[in-house]
Length: 472
Image (cartoon, rainbow, N blue to C red):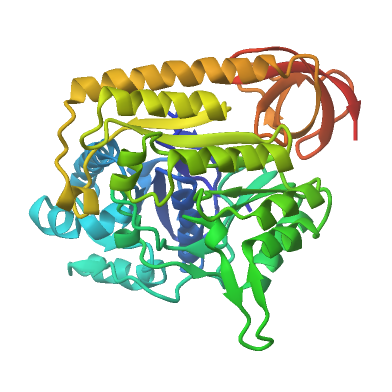
């Protein structure tokens, strides 16, 4: 069954809104937009499942919806500004549509509930990340004119028993949430306060979801968590403990045709066992997202990242030694509190050393309630932050192009995800290293979800172009 939703991933700047699917059952219509990270998008799939089970169907037009939901991110100020603007647009439509309800979900919901619900009166419903099961009650309360809020955090909720409604629409790739919350108290981050403590989902429920996806034709799953390497589940019946390395192997063993990715890894927690598991199974993708945030030891200490630049570089060396050619990407923050030009140069240096294929790059925006907001002064002028970010982006563009140029002449096994955005007679897919490849369909009779061996002939900084050499 297809569902229609829209997603805005702030991390992929420049991407358009993505309409995805449509349910044709139920009497009332809902519309949902998801902002920020993959975890939020995965949560939106859980919300869609809950709403579908309670008589709602989806619509691609918020103007016709009875319920409009925004699943929000509060990590950066820009995200909050975008969401406030969007809520204002929805509110104008609501004025002419009797009975329409507007709700805000996720991290921003927990942090700004009073302002959005009572002071600014932009929303009718506020639900935190652990409160999605209560949405039917919240909707009923809001419909009767009551204030409707639930932002309580849970130490147990993992939504393990809820089968998400798949919103991606390509029928090839899917997310599986394996844990929720975070115990790392990075000083710049709101996640521990908005999503609570770490709790891992039961192993069997993860394996059942992965098997169901494979049986339904999906050929790639991404295991999601704020810090996936912290996954740790002990079965109360057998007393058997499963670490993330073991979970990776269990999911990979479902079928060699099912690719397995994971995100996100905290550098301090990605173990040698995880790296060795990646070498044992060809279908565990050779790609690791390893956020560095800064390359300067003093700034890393202020950020409470619990590693040094030397330690991080040694981890990169270990990854490349155990998994030659492994793709590595990162998150980088420019202009954190008290950052100097020398500190900034050390961040550029660690980027060059690590040779990231891709980075998600931002300048620092203070988040109320975080340890950084309480302890430090946001003292780097915005024009300097933006200039340093521009230098980081320019370096990453250079590194990305160099990385892609090194792939020219090589052959990669590519999982076909669908048509190229620009040409319908071309396929788009990804290599095990998470690089995008575009290539002519020709007369091979392939379809989405098939594998092809593609030889790279040219590239840009973002895309590899090639031709099919063989099919699987």
